[in-house]
View 1: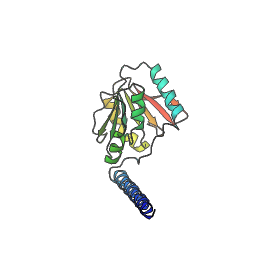
View 2: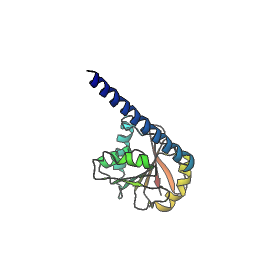
View 3: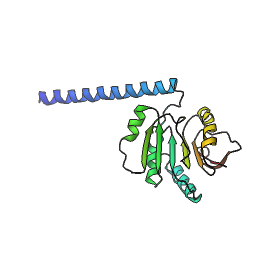
View 4: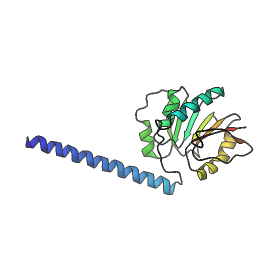
Length: 188
């Protein structure tokens, strides 16, 4: 009985240590990318919480009859949004620079339409995408706006999660879902 108790205690200690290492690495990587790479901190998109908003989003996107349904999430984090779009049949890509989150996003890919790229999304060519999803701070969205205006084709959709873009001559707000939860823009 003593041996079983010791084994159980060792297993608990090892699991606690692994959890500590996981949290420490995550915090370190997140802190590095937030402070030195000037990106927004990772905040998970919990699709269960936003289920209704995403269902409304998918209905709206279907009503647009888009020619190009290729989807990209800029700063895809843990990949939940990419996987959600892939489940709905969209060829879906996530671009994530944080190596920890990139690895996390690749776990459990069950859909052949979901792909992840480890890169800085400011350096990636977005010309082939018809739908762009961004969950970044407004300040980052504003830095991203010239790139979107230059690279996206007319009719492309930009979805901003909570943090808006300022409208321009080329980018117009066409729909809000649940207040400012999802802001949908179109490139003219």
